[in-house]
Length: 413
Image (cartoon, rainbow, N blue to C red):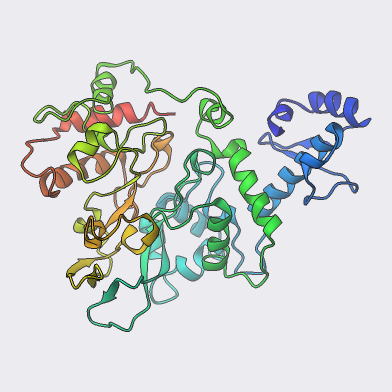
């Protein structure tokens, strides 16, 4: 509903004057609306109100959702949602962190899990833009050198909010949250260190704002798709390089050494984040799978601490693994039955990210280890050479391939 009022204050005046006898909204610089009325509160139910008040209720909820996202600390360490999810990119890059540290060393980005292990330094966040995340160990995972441990801490980049709230039902790089409300509550608890508990309505308002606010889409066509419009299509490409790069993302049978469609094995579907039918023939993953292990942890380019794990399928089969971040292994709900695949198969498996707007959200991978698109693409040669289902396939990315894929990905707006 708020979209109706993003064009101008005159339109707001015309529509709301007709409905309510006066305008109750103010157009903000970024096109959002601030609704003001003592008669309607943010816990109103639009469905229970007549048309005029329904409009005002929706505006009021949007305004409060924006305030909660941008300003509310819930009595914590000073962080808000906006602290880590910028208007421009939905995330924080190393360059962002460096500029913010120079501008204000007391910026709440540089507290708690944004600090180095000594609790003081800012080297990690200004170099990699990663934060510490403490996660529980499920029953089937133990630390070899400390079997009584119940949690581990890993270091991850901040997932972008571009397109994801409205268009990607899988949240967090390890897929541990199933709703925006659950994700918001986890962030408020874990990153903002709240002392005031958010209400159910406040969490709903944050989620609504993320699903509807224009800042959360990489382009108008993605916003239209979220509202029921046509799904985005792969751009055709203008240059020869872009057109060559497009071929890697076209749904095509896996027929090495041909590289056509190799990226689409995992990056297919409207949001370019689903395993396609050909990927399902290569990997032990059904069509539509949203996560894969691509061996980023095997490289560990950021040199993060390693964990020695003992992984038990509950039937006496224990597998040892070493990794800086177990990824989706720690999210039992997304793993297939252990009678099908041993859980160790999913060490280092992470969410397949959607790719629209990807050129603006560097760095890449769960640990922000790929600082550029080209770095991310080059990593896949390591993956092709070491993945048990692709090793020996003969797939080789040349420098020209890397340039072509990157050129095409920059068109994904």
